[in-house]
Length: 255
Image (cartoon, rainbow, N blue to C red; front, side, top):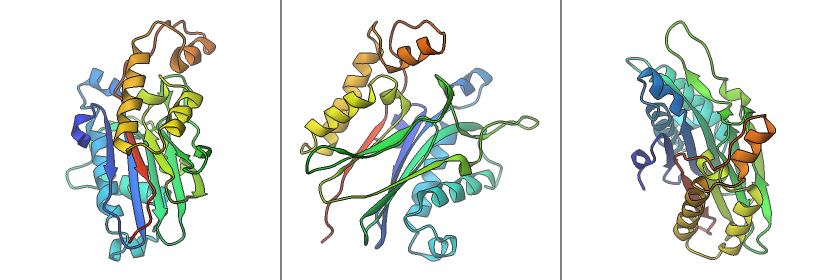
């Protein structure tokens, strides 16, 4: 799929440099549509800038910024570029998860802001090597980076993003997902599916997760989002219909 086919979600997969490989995912906040704002544009523009800068980490921009395999620095720099772009930045807000692999050491770092997220499944035994935690003020209201209309304020700085790290092994799976997945599939269910399918083609795993999340979104039963809503005092008897985006990558030894 292309980033523009993900509704209000977006993602990037940067071409690897000699030292670093980076991917990311974002979910634009759909509530902007009520004010006539394209809810997808902010997430798309943020991911596009992340891709462009990630592909230049070996160049002058990357060396000056000092963010080789530093996803939080990458995300921060790209947000700043977005705010300073000619003509002004797009109004909107988004969650963001960016992962960067140091191809020399095998260390994978993840920066997560909001309720998108990532996890790593070990190839050897299907165990979970890394799992991000959602950042929410309450169910359905994630922490997000934002460009508000003139005279308004909101959002949080990218410095609020939480960082995670693990050393990956050949064959490990990295899964990035938006809340359309995590609101409809529990953490244990997600990880169990990925563990069972860890030897499958990454595209097959991604498609399976999307189908499972879509099915749960339409069911009238307790799923993660309805359970969280109930805990917050809101009655909800079905899943959450939302844009559903997932990126799956396998760690391979470079030739």
